[in-house]
Length: 98
Image 1 (cartoon, rainbow, N blue to C red):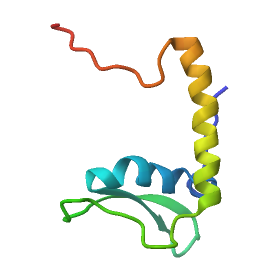
Image 2 (cartoon, rainbow, N blue to C red; image 1 turned 90 degrees about the vertical axis):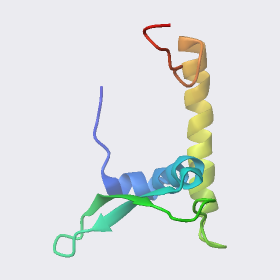
Image 3 (cartoon, rainbow, N blue to C red; image 1 turned 30 degrees about the horizontal axis):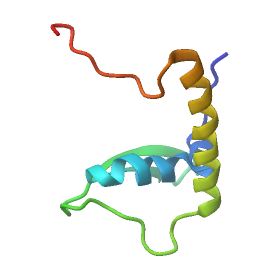
């Protein structure tokens, strides 16, 4: 059964931090959240392109270690299941003409 996760839950668990730290920042990108001033609801705000050639990093002390550990533990659990069920963790890219 599929369920929707709110942006607030996505952020609170640590997914936003970790998707930025592990994927977007090294590519010079940052996924960010905007908060609607009227409702207070968090929404995905967009993707920021960073002009620095080395990409972006979090400032000293900005990484929440509890969030990082929670997401890393989730990755380990999911990787075990995916690896056993599918024989891989990350789906490979294959060209149709190859």
